[in-house]
Each structure stands twice: as structure tokens, then as C-alpha cells.
Amino acid sequence: MIGILLALQVNNWNELRKTKEKEKVILKEIISDLIVNENNAQIRLMHTYDIGRDSIMKIFTHVINHLENKLPYDSILSRHFALIHQLPGLNIKTSGYESLKSSGLDMIQNDSLRSNIGEYYTVTIESTKGIYTELRDDFYNYILKFPRTIFVTKMDKNQRRIQIPTNYAQLLENVEYVESLKMFSGIYLINLNETKEYLSKTKILREKMEEYIDHN
Image (cartoon, rainbow, N blue to C red; front, top):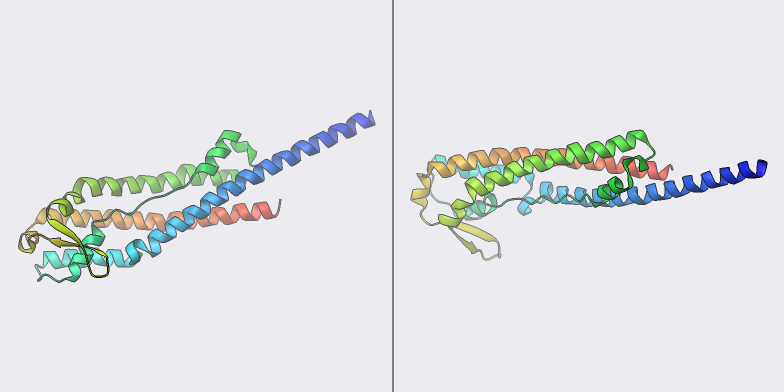
């Protein structure tokens, strides 16, 4: 009888060890995804078109103010037009979470961590995607037609893209363009703020997972 009990204990211990090892493999895969997500978000916030998060909003303000006040054409506008006529990308990696779902969420032994992971992928990421979709739709529906029809795209001496209005005087009278920029810049700011929040939550989750692995 004692031998049977010992065998059962050893078997249970082995099964628990295998479960913990599989849990660690999946957690490390998710952590790898989170690192990629962090890097992508940081690139968007700190190096958006090589000018930075705050600068892109200043550029929107500068262009809108320039047009509304019908100020003379300034060559710097050609670079600014090219910057605000671009759509920032959104790259979110979720392969580790998909592996977890295939294995079963209860693979994560810690209830709090399991809840944190689920909330990140079902709430945080979905919110980020939703706001980005609004930005993308606004860009394709209201912005893209302008650089395609009333601007000429070239490269400057530093091999940076610039866009020059085909007729600046007419552009000054183009109310639709200015109003479209106002709407787009507002959604752009919301999107960047959401990205900042998303980056913070991504980092917090990664740190919690790394701490859990270190102590288990």
C-alpha cells in the first residue's frame, strides 16, 4: 500500500512538473510577443516619422493655422504635408496568447495573472485596435484623396518625401481640406494617447509575468 501511494505521489509530482514546464514555455512565448509589442509602440510614440509624438501634433496645428489664416506659402510646409498625409502602422503580436488559448487558459496556475493576461488581450488590445480602425477609416475616407489629387509628391535633397500643393491659392480656399485635417488630427491624438496607455499596460503585464516565472 505504501509503495502504491509513493508511486502515485511521484506520478502526481511528474505531472505537476510537466504542467509547470508547459506553463513556463507559453508564458515565455507571450513575453516575447509583449516585447515586440512594446518596441512597436515605442517606435510609434518616440519616432513617429522621425519627429516624435508631440511634434506631429504641433505640425497639424501649424498647417491648419497656416491655411486658416491664409499665410504665404513656406517651403517647410512641403515636408509637413507629407508627414500629416501618412497613416501610422499598428503591429500587435498575439501568437503566444493564441497558443495559450489552444492549450486552455487554466494552463496558467495563478488566478490573478491569468486574469491579467485575459484582460490585456480581450480589453486593452481590442480597445487599441478599435481606435486605430477609426483613425484608418478616417484617413482612407477623408484624407487620402487630397494628396492623390491636389499635391505633387517628390523627394527633397535629403531623400525625404515632400508634398507640394499644385495650386496653393486654391488650397487656401479649400474648406473641406482644412476641416478634414481638423477631424483627422483629433482622432490622431486620441490614437497616440491610446498607444501610450497600451504601451504602459503592455510593460506592466510583461513585468508581472517575468516576476512570476522568476519565483516559480
